[in-house]
Length: 429
Ligand SMILES: *[C@@H]1O[C@H](CO)[C@@H](O)[C@H](O)[C@H]1NC(C)=O
Ligand SMILES: *[C@@H]1O[C@H](CO)[C@@H](O)[C@H](O)[C@H]1NC(C)=O
Ligand SMILES: *[C@@H]1O[C@H](CO)[C@@H](O)[C@H](O)[C@H]1NC(C)=O
Ligand SMILES: *[C@@H]1O[C@H](CO)[C@@H](O)[C@H](O)[C@H]1NC(C)=O
Ligand SMILES: *[C@@H]1O[C@H](CO)[C@@H](O)[C@H](O)[C@H]1NC(C)=O
Image (tube, rainbow, N blue to C red; front, side):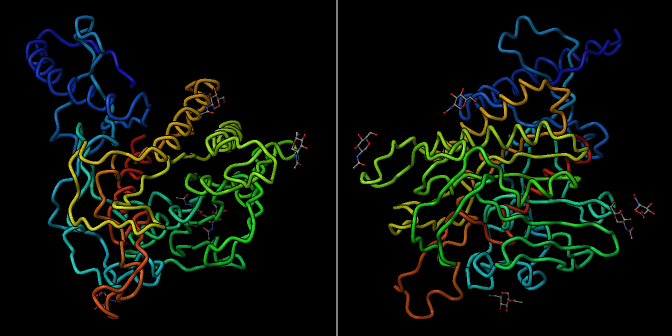
């Protein structure tokens, strides 16, 4: 965390000391809990100065592991937007299934599909140490005049871009100006703001030959080139003002790994392939190393966000073995444990991010920021479509067998609040 030294005048010193002591008691505990739960990480820190709401929350004080050594004149001017909790919000979402149906993938249009409960829509994200202003689509559009954004990654990136389009479309309707032949990458323009938002389909971020039909039925192992970036996004990258880059779950697939244009191993392949199983973590680690090196070292003036992968909430089984997600409320911190696979992916992400920041130095890598929503979304098992990925799944009978989705997010839903955080970072970061 960035700390700021300030000379405190004698007049204010007593008041300050009292604040300091009480704040240590509160933040010290929270901070330890965070470290304990999520390990050593470095979330993006954001200044709360200049934020109108910061008047309400007194500046809190930090937090060295040894409180005895803490100088009295350190003031925190940064707030960790990723540590907090979900609180009730009678206002609810900015948009409805009715106002934004056309931008939402039918599989995430939960209310239209007949999801009966709506309580999950009335929670907002509240960081512990500051208040987060409600996403203001007017403000976003004004700030982003003449800018271009891209959301790069898999179907979660698409889920996220659709959420942002829905929030912005309450002010101006975007116009689709491009799609690739499979409608997987798309681009929209907000004509009166000259803002462009792209969604780039690149689930591995590195070059992949995928043998899969549109239903995800595979006819051969993925051929994955760990050291060759996917041109679908790297060609566009230099022209972007803002990029949100993410990956994750696709690396769990059976694949043959290539480096230097030669097969080096595989993951989950048949014994007859006679190849070393290197594990998906090896492939993810190697790929992310190349991705983050490219992003951090490119001389674009744009801002890049690396988003960590987001945990799923299949319970009582996995996606392919009858797992479901029937909850209708958020859970409290600690109630839900992150699954091992999610932890492995996230550990690789955090360690590669830290490596590149370390190698480049804080200054040089200043335009690359980490978005770590894992903790925030782990407590929202209620935000997924579940059986309502299909239109009225139980019309055929209460016991109809339906595929559940406990990975993507209903729109509207918790993923909308990622945009509140991102706007705050863009404004004050
Ligand atoms: C929104 O959802 C409600 C409830 O399922 C449904 O009656 C309505 O038709 C939906 N609106 C649109 C535009 O799909
Ligand atoms: C839109 O933005 C682009 C990129 O900044 C700029 O080159 C172009 O002139 C803008 N067009 C209009 C009509 O303002
Ligand atoms: C947007 O681009 C247009 C055309 O290039 C320019 O006239 C205008 O000042 C720009 N607006 C902003 C906010 O950069
Ligand atoms: C598998 O690889 C080993 C070592 O490269 C080789 O000795 C063996 O003949 C191979 N087996 C098959 C079935 O290709
Ligand atoms: C990932 O790669 C780094 C080097 O970039 C290495 O230090 C680390 O041990 C690797 N981690 C895993 C899980 O393979």
